Length: 242
Image (cartoon, rainbow, N blue to C red):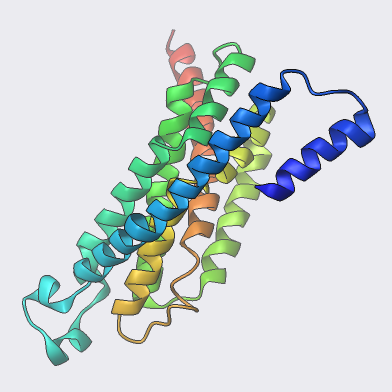
């Protein structure tokens, strides 16, 4: 927080060389931000991270999956972790819908586009993308496939979609991937990946536990581009019927 304050005030006084209007209000606002961030970080450490990690460990526990413990864990297949994939998808969808930064971007996009881009439609498309991405990322941790296979393939799909997608949505779709990795989504997703990697046999928390956030950034781009392309295709099909 302190570096941000220094940069803002430094540019204001040394580059722009004008006094800050409503200085008292600005200082009070900075205090609120500092207090909120401090409480938020405490909440992450005491609740969000432990809860997400604990849920992942419990859902991938062989005793929960098969009702057996001990050596039975070696016999588990990727398809036995269905509850893990479902939890990953639902937590990805719900945290994204609740993401304040996504709401702000969606409302601004609707305002600037004159209603061409609907805020709720954009939020749902991004949330579905995150849900699919995190669920696929959880599957990757279970089966142990290297991360770069998915990331390279995903961006190839994005490049193909970008070529065919309407130009007005391209930049917004790319930004939609960034706003998902913010205050609400990242802590739970990171905790989920680390907890899952620690409980699946043969997985490393360092090598396999991280990477879910990359899925949460990539798949919303695919989802938003696909949402607009599907909308345009449906509109053309309806128009041709008339």
